[in-house]
Length: 253
Image (cartoon, rainbow, N blue to C red; front, side, top):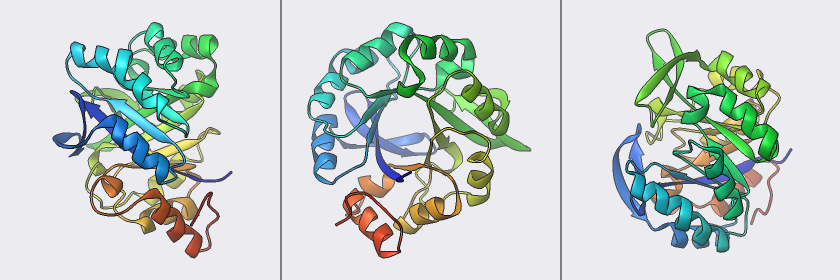
């Protein structure tokens, strides 16, 4: 399976933002413009996530932003954030999303995932897995890490696989925006627990971090925020780096 590089776009109150450890967000651009740029930079996929706190902005995201972005997006597009109903999943798919990311609602109610998979099919459902190290283990969190569950990552991954997830997106809260790189040991273990494609995001600071993940784990895709938001790094350059280090990629220049 060809590995994927996925720019992550966080939408908050009309703009794209980026923070550190899910806090201290700064403005990094406008959604539609970013979509066009990443199309030209040969991104494998794009992930657009709503983290707006107020209902008005969330409604705008569901009713307008996703549709406008999807029109200009020529690679697979995953959208989500603040999903609480089956109708919202349907709206995102009807607006042009290829896949829908569900995080908090599944952490609160695993039956929601099971029902959604029966209605829409597992192939379009990506389950977000936010996690933090708390005391003695990595626990599942949600609502942008404001709330904690009693699930540890190992058991939660199997649980969502058994209930209809088509893909998993791991979000390392402790590493978010730090550019320090991932824990390869954890990713090795977690990517062997389930038989689903897994996206990892958190702390990607250079192209070597991506290469290490792909070479040393079964992770299928890497999501990057800060790496592409700041500086002159692009998906094209990332793939060229991988190719120059003898790793097979798509569309390398």
